[in-house]
Length: 64
Image 1: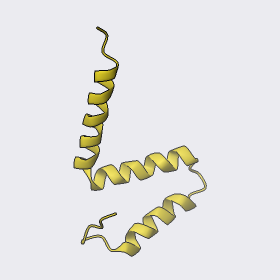
Image 2: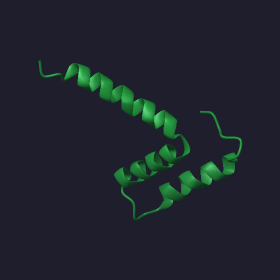
Image 3: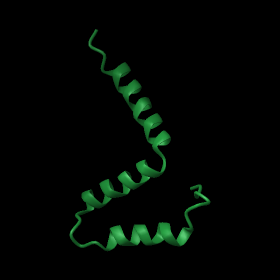
């Protein structure tokens, strides 16, 4: 995984540890929180994946 030069590795580890250590979050909520952070950091990657998945699903699930 490529690291953003502005974000030191310790900070990324502490964010993951903070999310994993939060006992109020279920596994699903923790995964969604990690996805939200990833989407904030790399919106273009998330947009391309969403477009690609939508294209494939639309192609395979067409009604005609």
